Image (cartoon, rainbow, N blue to C red; front, side, top):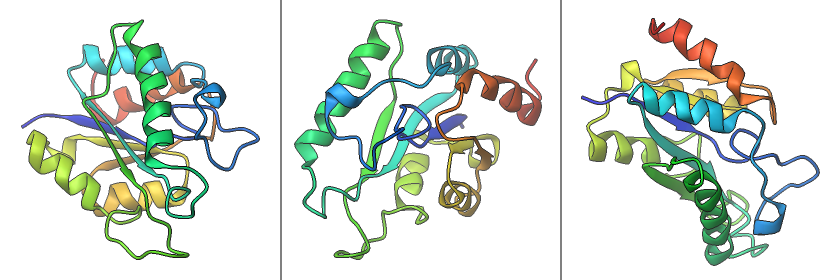
Length: 167
């Protein structure tokens, strides 16, 4: 079984200050410390997965193609550092106009990843900046890590080390 770190996108991977939705690649910037965090996690053999709600799609504010362009920009930046996500999962629905099982705090996206990648949930993490992220992680049997929105993510290395017993 493999260990994984699931990460929320907006506010954790990228800075979303001043935006309700990030759907324009020009508005996408990594939060400080993301490269350091992802590099360390890869060195520890964690799978890296994004799980994100992108409800602006069903609300007609942006399209799946817009979300994919943002992901392409993110991947382009990460590739420059020899990094990549093993998979990006996102829910395009919003409870205002569509019911679904994939929106966090639902766990369908995590369950798919856990099965697909043979992930050891009890030794894996969910990093998020909202209570719903923590609830999602707990419901899926992961170790939840609540971070401050748009913080320096390199600080999370120490938290993961402490919680996993890695030195």
